[in-house]
Figure 1 (cartoon, one colour):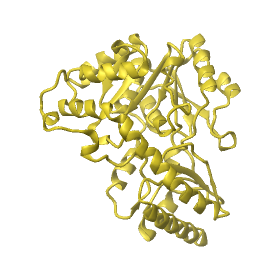
Figure 2: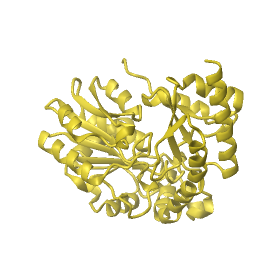
Figure 3: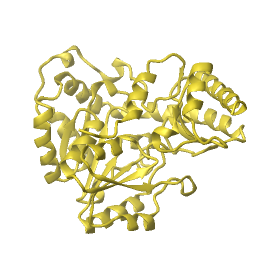
Figure 4: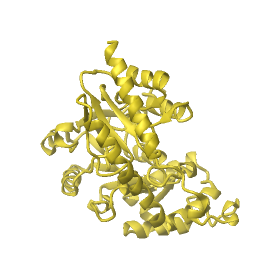
Length: 365
């Protein structure tokens, strides 16, 4: 089967264990065990149900989204949830609208299903909000799926709720499903437009996990919430690829869900602690342009007069010991995604090294 490889994921997996100041990650640090109230019994291979997920977790998520368990599907992380939505919604030749810059998994998934990708630009000049007039021109009878992220990956831009609603309503008229990946939305302050898009329409499916905001990537605990007909087909696919979900994951996730209110503030504190350091550094340089994120632990920035950042990232890593992500992985040569989930002193040192790498790289062009 021919498909577009998910090259960013290969890069990210290798970089995570490389030497240097790690400023390439977009997920929170792992919480300490005592914060989650884990017990020895949670590590048992027994659970209430491992076939389709612990019913306690399904009930918790249904309550969170104001719906019933029929609208919830448990998955091994949001990446699997996104795959299952694609596989359930698309056939070969269907069109899928995908934002750009954007998370490259969505393009790889389309290529696996021989779907046609239609790019929806999200531009710096517009605060990375999609242009609704442009969207209307792209939406035709061949479009079966529209894929959005909120917060936007990689910029962490928040999409206005009225704009999301307008997109959802247009797609409903067209019979088009809207997938909104919400793995970063809890980086926002509670009550600050952080509610899920699930309630915006019957044609909406949202995906999420305990990874990006809560630091529990090792659990591979994700979910999708959406229309019953779509989720029923996703369960058919799960029967093929997932005979059962890991029991220990389900047990641990039960306590994690019950303690999310204790975990979420840690991510917000990290943003508020480290963002001023990042902003001060970026503002001190006349060759840096950046987007001010409303939350999160990464910044999306452009190095002026540089048209590609793949080689710059290599110089930063090999010669200056700081690890960042080149914008090429997000269809944006000349840009960088820089994470700041580390301690403040390390953030300052990492940015200092990055600045030296930029100066060095420019001097040898």
